[in-house]
Amino acid sequence: MQNFGMSMLWFWVCYIAVTCVGVAHCVFNIKVLHMKPMDGHSMGEGYEATKPWHPLYNIVLFPLFGWLYMRGLATPTAAEALITGAIWAGICIVFDLVGWVLIPHPWRLTFRQFYIEYQPHITLIYLIIFLSPLVGYGFAML
Image 1 (cartoon, rainbow, N blue to C red):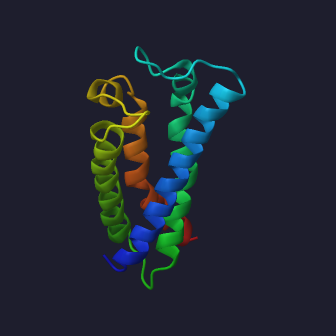
Image 2: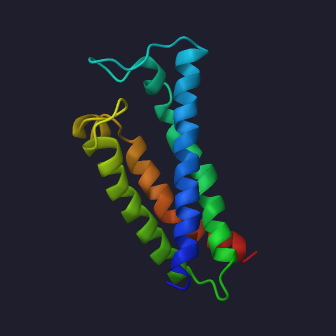
Image 3: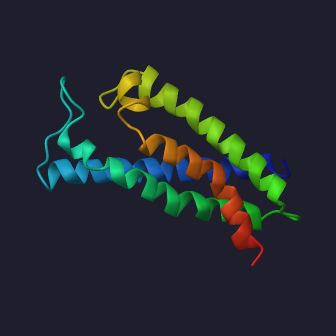
């Protein structure tokens, strides 16, 4: 990897941005649209309504940040983009498991909720994250 530090900077800024957009969307649904929040029995209408939008947040933001990383390299390559995508997706998969499933917090999900009930969205998100540096590479080569 040509510049691991910059790769991590762009990844984490994007991950935080995507997460903030998703949380803001859920809060908007609950507070403004008066959808039901999460409770002990379900994830709530406010969250459920955001699920189809999650891949969209990622498909807009992650390729942008992939492009920012790739255009900053002295010699961007498709191989660099694929390695970066694999690292980004791997970190995201592990961090999501810890942050959304294992650590107790009010918006915590069970394994079933995150890996089964969140299909196909979570799989699409991880695929988007993996491919984003490659898309960014394509735009950087224009």
